[in-house]
Image 1 (cartoon, rainbow, N blue to C red):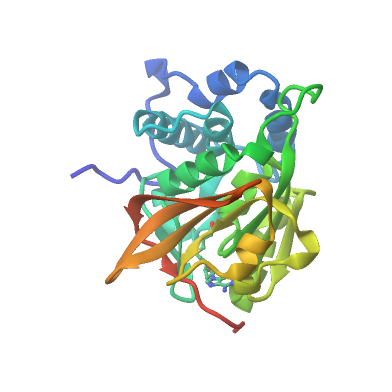
Image 2: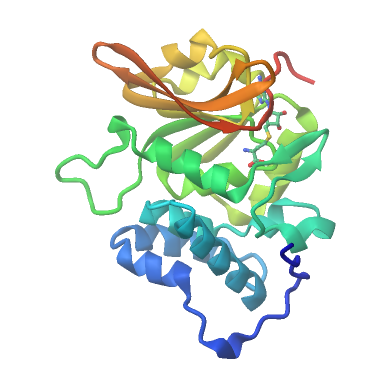
Length: 271
Ligand code: SAH
């Protein structure tokens, strides 16, 4: 079994390990600018070389696991996941594992966050239009289930505006505290029942749910732009959830069922 790195981890920095995040930021061309801007804003405290190295390793793993989008890999290499979990769990923040965030909820595994972000970014409505500045962030996205705010931070580097809604007051407040030092002007945190979406921000180029229900709420489909894409876990069998993708085309909705996943349940109402 792989040994868990302690935190801060003791890493051998003399090994000349590649700085994956930096490499990808460069190869991603224009996206580097946005990332750098974020990186500047995202350093309320000094970046520890240890967490930077652990993130770079995590990004390498994500690439091996099949994540191809340079933008997604750059975002995953930029957002400091350890700042979104309790300090006692920070040592596990860059492992491929989900972690508790309080109130019986969990932060998704990095590879699930990256996979969903990659699927979302492939939305037709999120493709660069002719004349757009290279690497410009496009489109409005709605996230259902803010949790600790980690995925919202990742999405903030990938799209123009992120609306993120959470039904548990305690987690909404926690996400606000977690995100405050990053000063992400394009993340809008909302407290409410995401089952009804958030009509005021609609239509969305993308909708991403971090909690799985028995059916996709009609409001989500209604609030999706033409060319927009919904990525969500859905109960597809007894006790079984799968990731689904729904594209809104000019001719209607097109649904694809992908791999099995395990998310916390989608619940209605606020608490
Ligand atoms: N993206 C989150 C994952 C949080 S887990 C992160 O990065 O941490 C999923 C979250 O969905 C939980 O916080 C849960 O409270 C929330 N949730 C479940 N049903 C919801 C609903 N109807 N509206 C809003 N949030 C919901």
